[in-house]
Picture 1: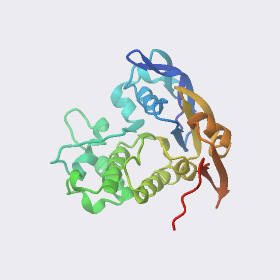
Picture 2 (picture 1 turned 90 degrees about the vertical axis):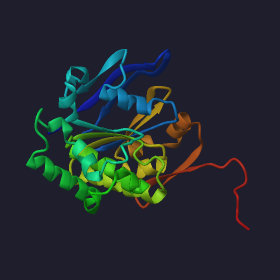
Picture 3 (picture 1 turned 180 degrees about the horizontal axis):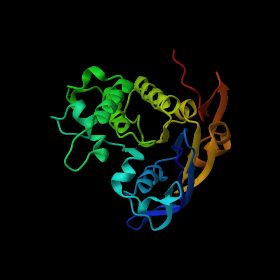
Length: 265
């Protein structure tokens, strides 16, 4: 099913502090869109607003033309999955139990997982490479394994659209690439649509299809990676002068150094 997620003239604030200022964005089906920009520009706030977790004072978020505000929460959970920036679970919870939480929106009032649900749970663990760890406590897993575990829970939700807030935050570079390769596979192999907040421009150019660059709660530029990640846009959004060149088919962004480079003796 093709789903179109769109934000239209969104206005949102934290108390008296405005964060999103008539922001509009459209997210292409079957692609990965990266939200990038400096801290405080509204990236995480946009995801929360699109999920209905943060009240908006203007504009609307629509899914296939229907306002998110008019979609019941369990029904919305069947269509959009959300992976927040920080995740926690009780010490006693096993990976298998965590994955089951992903299917909650499909459970009947008095029933538990169906056979189809259990099949989805097994497939989710297979996709993230954690099949043999279902019996283990989530909190004894490594950082990279934990992040894959949370992605498996999102997969068990079986939604076509996945919103991810900094999915590789706090991970070593090896696991950053491993997790984003997994996310890439969700799109190419499983047909998911992914919107992810990222901080690293080079990770963005390596894995995303499209980019939305935010500054001060507004969209400065949006489009494909090659159209959007330019010296001019990076300078305007991040206040950083860079050199951008193509290597092995992907864009590489290197900040210009203002002083003498440090050369090891």
